[in-house]
Length: 125
Image (cartoon, rainbow, N blue to C red; front, top):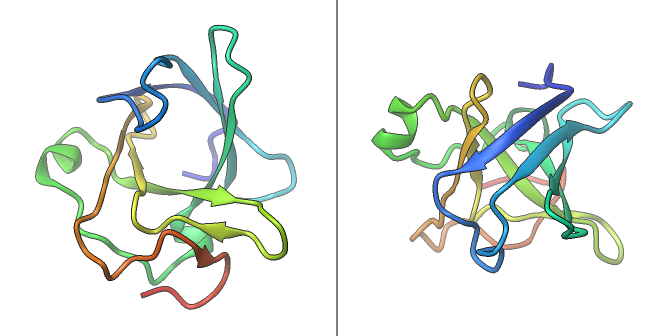
């Protein structure tokens, strides 16, 4: 997954809070293996940073719904919150991406096992 430099991304359903946005580009961040910027199109100045779970949370393995797996959405990305201090990732709402087609779904996990703010690079559940 970390070999992607730029690709268009289409969500199967809008991300919560971003329902008015439907067109995105995923770009790798130069010099940071497995770190990406998800940028919205259409005049919205929105950029989210995403971390490849394989690189930044290797022990993280939530259950991926069968329909997402069947659609090739096998790459798990985590939304990064740069915030004050050490960055965190949202383990409760990962994105699953098909790295060939750009089809993406944000999962909202029902489990309380995954925190909304886990320290980036810290021990994962």
